[in-house]
Structures are given as structure tokens and as C-alpha cells.
Length: 193
Ligand code: AMP
Image 1: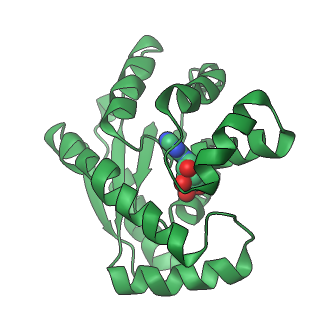
Image 2: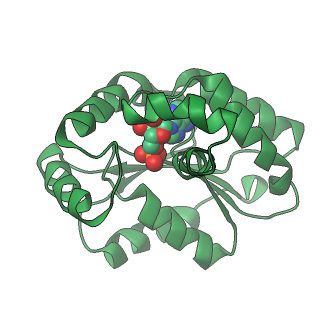
Image 3: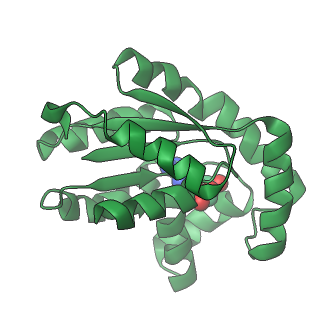
């Protein structure tokens, strides 16, 4: 099963996708985490990505895809793969479709985590106090939100047209949201599982 998590910053993608990965015993590919790891290690890719991540901009597609590509071969033998924070725009969605076609593993499900703006603002302030992310200042969060709206939201229609989109109400306790996610996973067509 190949599952994409889409949602604005603060919607709980990281938490819920990590939890689903453990539940389904799959692998979790978070491009944000992969990029932060490259930055921590000071690789050439990391150095290039850093300027974009710090400015809360999207890292150029080729750079993200190059890093992701190193992990794609891990996908073929595993049954379940969760994409968290990827794709972020239509070009990336098209490249992902090609990559999955090459390894003959179709996309199974796209989960859109939906949260009202006021709730997001509240959560992000909390996260800022817990984590030390250079892109979690109020101004950068605003920028990431704008990028989400302009570049990532068009993916919703793209995947809805493909019949893959499931909307998940991401307000409630972590357990409540997770239960809704499991319900969607249970509805995946057998030929796409
Ligand atoms: P995230 O952890 O998913 O919130 O990502 C943190 C930052 O990493 C984003 O604000 C972008 O700068 C960068 N990033 C993560 N995933 C992508 C992606 N798929 N395409 C471009 N930039 C990305």
C-alpha cells in the first residue's frame, strides 16, 4: 500500500503517519525529515536545501527528488509506504506517479488532514515551544501556510479526480484522528493495496 498524507503545517501529518507506519509495519518517507538529515550531515544537497528550508520556501523539485530517489528502491520490496510532506506540488505528484509506475506499485490512498485555521495557529504555537525548528517562527509558519495554499492544495483536486482522495477530519484527540485514518485505510480497493 502506498499512502500520501497531505495537510497544512500543524495538521498532524508527522504524528499520524508515524503512527500508521508502526501499525502497518511499513516505511515512512518524510521529505522534510530527509532534508533535515542532509542538512545535519552537511552534505552538498543539505547545504543547498538549507537556504530554502530556513526561508520556509519549497526546496527545488530536482533536489528533493534526487534525495527521495535514493530511497525509492527500498519501496519495491515493502508492502506499505507512507509519504509525508511529499508531493508538495503538481510536478512532484507527476514524478511520484512515474516512480511508482516504474516499480509497479500503484498509489493506494491520499489522506487529506483537514484542520480549521484557528486550530492550526494554536497547535503551531505549541509546537514552536516543543521543537527547535528554524522554520517554525510565526512569520515562517505564515509563509509555509501560503505556499501550502498556492502550491500544495491543487493536489487535492488532482487526487480527487483520480478517485484516491479521502478527507480526514483532523480535529480531535490523536486516537480519534487515527481511528478515522484506519477507517479510510480499510476502504482501499484490493487491486491497489
Ligand atoms: P516538513 O517537515 O514537511 O514541514 O518540511 C519542512 C521544509 O522542508 C519545508 O518547508 C520545505 O522547505 C522543505 N520540504 C519538505 N518536503 C518538501 C518537498 N516535497 N518539496 C519541497 N520542499 C520540501
